[in-house]
Length: 156
Image (tube, rainbow, N blue to C red):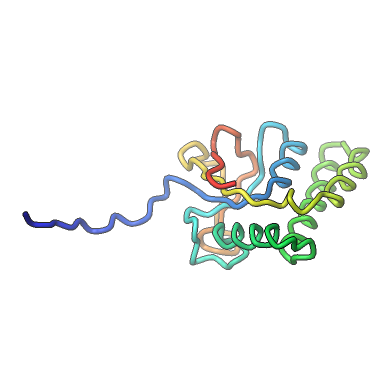
């Protein structure tokens, strides 16, 4: 019997990948019930992107910080700061400024375990035409209205 090898088909852009934290998912649900804001790439290990926009790297960095008890880890602090900025911006824009203090209090005091990362696999066909590219890195995309049925949590 002769072994025939087919050429590797290459990567497919059927899915997008995003590293999110548990707390970011909850804040998204609070700010935008029924939809999510997220950055993603079409490769789980987006080598063309910087480490700050590579899902595998972000997952690893956050998972390690939580496992080691790294409450002062730079990435954990950055995620917390970005969530606080989003809370302020989005609640003001929605006319919900009276909720900012309470939401800020909750995120500021959130325990480290809330920063446990997840990997989301996004159905690219379901979001066609609703995401933008051309940001800082070549495999970096943004969607502001991702719906729950358009992604699945594949690692948590």
